Length: 397
Image (cartoon, rainbow, N blue to C red; front, top):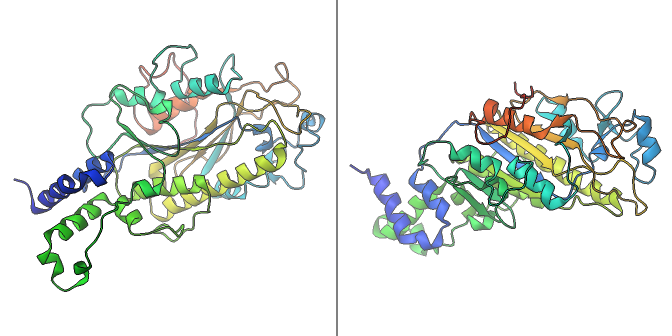
């Protein structure tokens, strides 16, 4: 027999469903069924990040031979060892490495790389090197294998502008998209009677509305006017688009939502011209947003349940161009953050003198990272996701 709470929640959804995003209704119906399952958060760095000026190989003679206008001074590099260091704008990420909560996988790519943004991103999002029509994404294919139906909300949520990322598309995978925190705030007019003694008993509609907001968890927080950049833990998020996306994701996670995949994006990495200042701003935004997110989850006791992965579709050419920028390249570093990662550098730093037609040589296939995430983190079968077998990478504690 339904409980009074279940009845009220259902009544609220029936009465107010036109005002609420559909996937929040699913979450509300499953409210209270909190999960301790592991979560993956993906950040897509769109445009092709210059990995050479992200993880700076200041000890490589090739860096000084190929970078003049774009060279980062050795005394400014945030040194990780005697050979490489981070861009000086990445102090947040440097701090996470010191705290043992962030790893950098070096030289990540795939065989016979494409320099097309569209094609290379498609390869990363499908994990398939051959072009096939109507192909599902790698995350979509992975979750298609799990038992259906799955309660407690969508399998994946994309927070950002534009279309749902291809990676999340599947036959039975339930994915949702929101553009900002405002999409979660329910625009429900509240009667002034709600503040009077006994008003809740006299106005059942007000009571039902409040029950629904409570069931939503995250939606209630955002509808309550939290717009000062402060999560519940008191750790401030910076004022940036990416940080806002990660803050929304954090609130979903802290609400107990059963969603296991969250996706965000940061654009602007296609730096063919005047790269130095653009790239500095992008890395500053990325670094501070990731640190705020990981610090927030750590303070909430949730960082061991969450793995963050940040990738770009390719890196940039080793030699800078005549426009004080860099052109499309191949391999690039990939970031992994969370309480369960083994911090530091993973894999060999690509050589800037031993090149393949002016490009870095890939040393780690990105599908090895996917294999580790699917098998070792999400406990999802790799079967039907990756074509072939790929050796996992040791980056989980």
